[in-house]
Image (cartoon, rainbow, N blue to C red; front, side, top):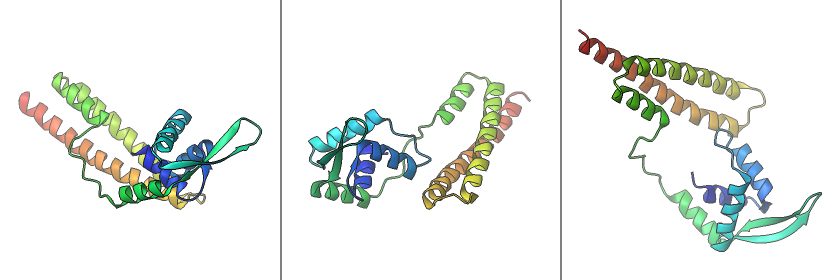
Length: 178
């Protein structure tokens, strides 16, 4: 995920200060990893330096001054270019789930790999239930539903892989020990 582009996208709707950007990110991307305040302000600093956002005033509520930021024309053009660029399918598998299974198999610990696959399948199934319940909740927003659909599709793909891998490990184990 490009934090810079997400923050610029949030600024496309109007000026916001860092705290509002963090809150908007965490609300609008509910299944994404929450942003740290330090990450928000470091990213805003780079966007400001690069002329993609500009300071749009300060306000003082109960605490320290808060600088509001606005998207510049250059920032809007950069955001448009990013939105118009089709993302290539990922060429490499980069997943802790995949790495753990491969390492267990490399260590010739088939029982451990199988136990891990079964436990992971249970965790994925539990998460699918949670996300399905979230989608059907009366309070679910379109953001919640779209994020849940995305997560469900990925969990479903992982579950199919877990199932296939369990079968392959069982077949391999049986073949080796027959």
